[in-house]
Amino acid sequence: MRFASHFLLNIYEYLVLYVGLTLLGAMCLLWTPVAFILYPLVPMSQGRALGRYVITLSFRFYIAILSMSGRFSFDLKELDLLADQPSLILAPNHPSLLDAVMVISRLPNISCVLKAELLNNIFLGAGARLARYISNKTVRHMMDMAEDDFSCNSHLLLFPEGTRTTTEPVNIFKGSVGLIAHHVQVPVQTILIETDSLFLSKGWSLFRKPPMPIHYRIRLGRRFDPPQHTKRFMAELEQYFRDELVNGSAFYPTNSMPMQPEREL
Image 1: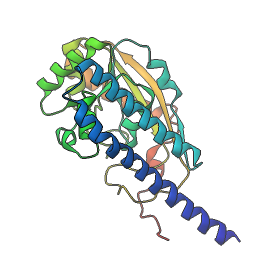
Image 2 (image 1 turned 135 degrees about the horizontal axis):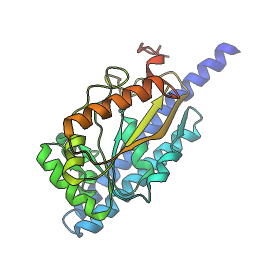
Image 3 (image 1 turned 30 degrees about the vertical axis):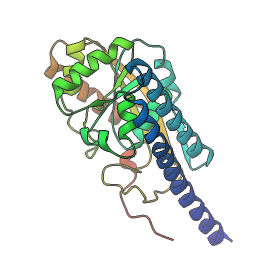
């Protein structure tokens, strides 16, 4: 009986994983032709608002489906405190591909810095362009686009590590957060993402099933004033994350689970 229960639970977890990914992919594909057509036709402000609203709604629906499965749990309520705040640069640590999904799912007026190649991605490109997400092709481009975007009282999501974490607790930080914050004189709100799983971390296959259930919690960290000295600020920011994630009240440390292949059915 125990073997049968474990076998059925394993099948259910595979269904949760694959149905969830299929649903997210389908929503992106369905929105792609609509966003592609709307991009040149609607005014920039309306297209930006609509594009961001649809992305937020889609990500929120995806998170809700995973939560209802009972195999994922998300504690994202602290993000709601930012919804009515003036413009901020949101700077989270980056343990997995779900990080941007979780943050954007709670904040409809948010821009995101993307790798330049993602703007041509069949799943994400058209929607990201309509939402006026920002390419990371050059630092000057990011600064100029961010300055323009803040005029609509938006937030900017930018990961200081530049890529998903490969060295606990965080990678060495890039300088873009400090440069943009200094250029536009906007505060930096740190966001601490905690999980008990390496699911969708760097090197994790999209279709590899992790041990479940998986838990995520996002909490708001310190808010830094716009920096006057970029290098000094980035060193302070990185040290803050290292201290907070190692010595703080870490909910689910990511290094608690070794990266081992999951046994297949």
